[in-house]
Length: 181
Image (tube, rainbow, N blue to C red; front, top):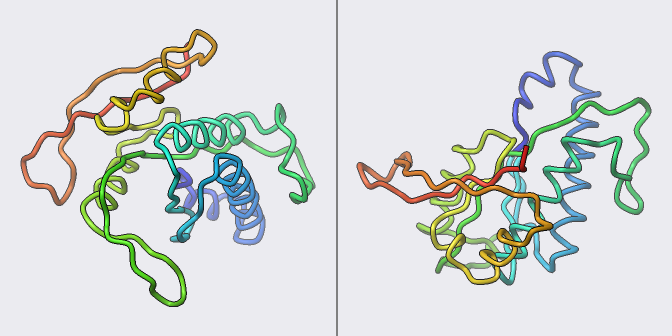
């Protein structure tokens, strides 16, 4: 989910803001595809995507956050629109969870439902846009753990406990992943 998109529309106007949102989608689509993932649907300025492995989702979302936060340092994806001006940084809020879900064909598209999907959406709400929120299940995945522990990752991990809207008083273990300072 794009952080502060409503404010973006108010500050720079609908047409320029929508252009920025479309660029954000181009960056997301390229990163998801590069990790063999698929975008299931868009909801306003947010997407729901699926990946074959949790580490693929982690790598894709870290890549997107870095590109949106530092647009001058990264070229747009192949075939992407050219910026008519120096782009301002954007922040992507992202939450990653894995587990079983219901997959159905709806409106001629595959769609996903259930507790795993709802948990993931709530994790996204905990993100500041300068971090990535992982569920305990994702953080415990061996490939994810190896990726986060790699000396070249430049990432930090902090364990937290959080209550998620709609889940009562249940406490969830989450991991806040950020860039080293």
